[in-house]
Amino acid sequence: MQTTIPKNVSIEDYLKQEEKASFKSEYIEGKIIPMAGGTVNHNQIAVNITTELNYAFKKRDYRVYMGDVRLWIPEKNIFTYPDIMVIEGDPIYYENRKDTILNPSLIIEVLSPSTKNYDKEGKFSAYRTIQGFSEYILVSQTKIYGEKFTKTDAKTWLFQEFYEEDQSIKVQLENISLQFDDIYHKVDL
Image (cartoon, rainbow, N blue to C red):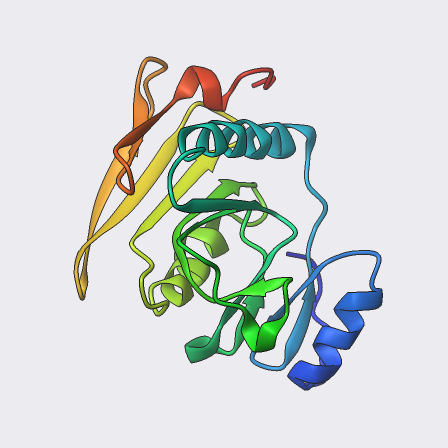
C-alpha cells in the first residue's frame, strides 16, 4: 500500500471514484488507500495460479476471479481487491454490482515486500469475518514459499508452511494440488 487520502469518504463516493479511476484503491473504514502497482513476478504467479484453478474447476461449480473483482467485507467496512478469489456456486454481489462480490470460499494473495505484513495480518483478520470463507493461501513472489490457513471450525484455523521445490499446496475445496513448478513457471526468482 502507498499513501492514505486523509478525509473520510462515503461508500457511494468511493464506488463512483473507482469507476473513473485509472488505478485501484482500497476502502477501509471511510479511508481510500491507493494500491501499489504489481511486478512482473506478482502478475505471472497470479496468472499461473488462476490458470491452474480454472482448469481444475472447469467442470465443477466454482468460479475463479483475479485482481479486478472487488470484495466487500461488511463487518469490517472494507472494499479490497484480493489477487485471486474462488467462489463456490454463484457469486453474491454487493448491491447487484457485477464488480463487487461478498462470498469467496478461497482467497489467494501473492506477497509483495511492501504488503506482506498487511496481507498476513490485517487482511486475514478481515477475511475471517466473511461467512463461508474457509481457506487462505499466501505465495511469495521473491522465493519459493507459501503459507496456507484452513478453517477447521468456527474459531480455529490450521496453519501450514511450504518451502521445498517439490512440494505442492493442496486446495481443500476440491482436493486439488498447486505444484510449485506450476506456480513459479516463467517466474525469475
